[in-house]
Length: 189
Image (cartoon, rainbow, N blue to C red; front, top):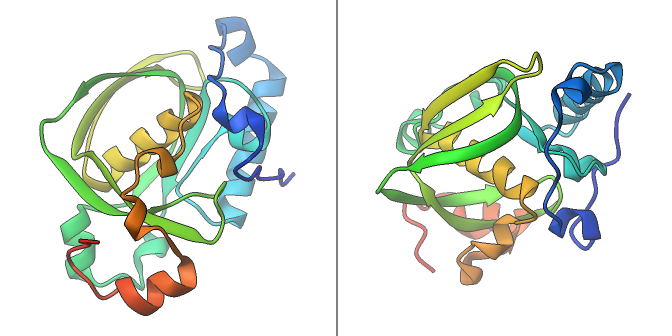
């Protein structure tokens, strides 16, 4: 079942989500939510989706960056962003335990700010601790685009949107991004 993607302005997108208990994680309701979120992510399409974006104020997000999303992206852009396919996985009650010292800046979009992008500085490397959909503890070390996706989704769980971190002079519609910014390797305003 496809879920409605909430758009900026909805109060839940600015609230800190609550942690899930082990009992909740094991419930059929959470399993169904994960399934529906994955269908919604594919339909959008996107690479990550946090529960608050579909109206659930809980610490749960899904991530999947499919190889097919990269077919039209020039190899040098993929290399610059350190973007590689990321298999589907669930992060529950995530906590960032380490951010690398190097920040990188790239355009980012969001399913809850449909039709817009902006340059957002993010740590190039990140380590998080979380639970998976089976309540197993996981430690994830990520770099490049995958690290960016994790930070973006964890921000959602804390009521933060990329527009809170963006370089405001780079905020653009998708149409104008394609027209004026897409060929730039550097994104100085």
